[in-house]
Image 1 (cartoon, protein in one colour):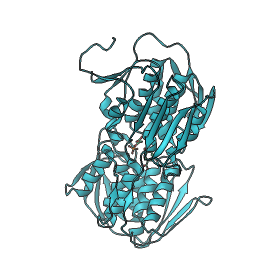
Image 2 (cartoon, rainbow, N blue to C red; image 1 turned 90 degrees about the vertical axis):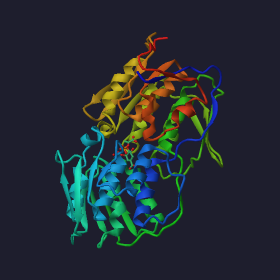
Image 3 (cartoon, rainbow, N blue to C red; image 1 turned 180 degrees about the vertical axis):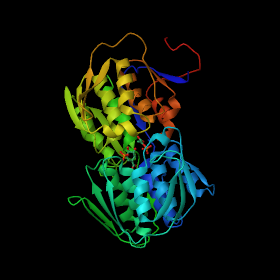
Image 4 (tube, protein in one colour; image 1 turned 180 degrees about the horizontal axis):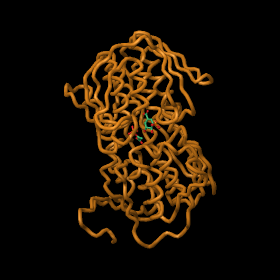
Length: 420
Ligand SMILES: O=C(O)C1=C[C@@H](OP(=O)(O)O)[C@@H](O)[C@H](O)C1
Ligand SMILES: C=C(OP(=O)(O)O)C(=O)O
């Protein structure tokens, strides 16, 4: 087995963490840059595999674009290649080919794209054959499956001859990601209007203006450090996370509010944010509709702290890198907690059972970077093994190097006994 064993630190946990930059902001900036013929100067692009894959595919003349496991790369490039009239086969990992894309393909077809499915209707791989702009400039689209379809359409909208009006139907999930898209578009000169009451977004046809753009550090990646601060046993522990701003485009900056209840105080500085410890609540309810990527972090943190956590808005977790609800249910048991469904597909509860087993827990990661990083902070309370640690490369390649700043990260070779 390929794994890492994490040791429990003795004494206060103190470190300055550089963090990866946001793959969400990076991938949007890259699409907009491509639409300006690569005239923007993008600074601090993410080293995340999802972003590096986007860079590689934007430069490639290959007819097959393999996005690996990168959801934004799949959705954003499908819209970009379609409206720029490129012939491409879009594919990815087996899991990517189980993640739905029919809602985006239907919308692009309405706008004039010729797209066919290579295997299963509604799922990658897809073949993009060309684009004949239709007179239609209005599209209705569901808002409750993935906001990435909406962001993908919005970013290409200024290049359409008649612009685009999107009518969002049903509940809207991950809204801060749509707002991030709109803010980046406006920065690059887009003319648009969003009416959240009427659930309508209108984008005028108008070319983007090339400009320099600097990407912020990743708040989703920061969440693991918040969990580490919350679980650190020494009350004088202190972490500084570099490159984060109080006013962020990223909805996952909600971790500041969530972690206040779990015992972490945030102080913003000129260089980032300083985390210190404060008393924690014994129970917490949180709606993750608009910050789904934080759910695993908070669930594991609550389980280890003995906090009863009620989670709502986690339906979309089932169609991400893995079924994250099922993965959490299986792995939380190994650290003496359970994730119980209270109300069908809507309300869940993390119940810490308080019976930590003496056996060293070995956490499976299901090809999901967030499973690895969400469970790593367990090491603040007890030794833990994280299997297939390389999964972190999707969003935060230097995660284990950063972990080594605060604790011992021991690589475990294939076939060795981890029970020691
Ligand atoms: O637009 C984005 O950058 C993202 C949107 C979210 O996906 P959904 O909109 O599918 O929830 C989030 O989970 C993902 O990690 C990144
Ligand atoms: C869901 C995620 O990414 P994507 O959907 O872009 O693969 C994530 O990073 O947690």
